[in-house]
Image (cartoon, rainbow, N blue to C red; front, top):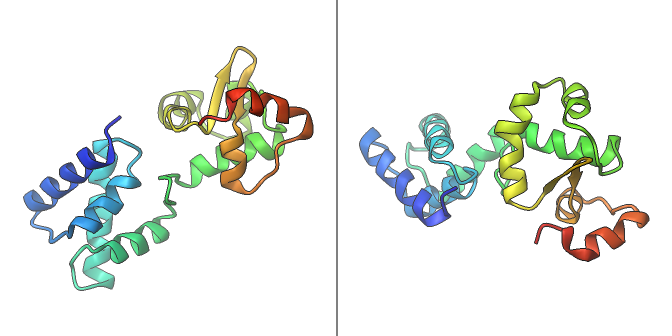
Length: 165
């Protein structure tokens, strides 16, 4: 994973190559929501460019990038609808876990490989999900992000340092 400063430079460079006028704050907003991945940053840049050309004056500012991300349903943490659906399913349908990947894949109607290779790495790296021998578990950080309260019998687990922070 790349940090935000590196991704901002990547977005600025890609914008120059593509002939897109992109302010530093706009590039930073795209970088923050790109999950630490240059490929995602470049994909988001192209989508924000399209939004800027249609809804703004073609210049990517922070406000334009933020509005485009809202339209794309990418939140401030870089979560897209599938990320949010996965975490909320673990919390709401499986009491926060642990839940096996096959059960989770079935509940989400997604392939196991998509969950393991695309969704989980970022959620684990950011501290929203843990993978245990018994299955996947949402962390206290995930509960807070979605505005849920952890179950009372889980509070001791989160206090023991498994909150992802």
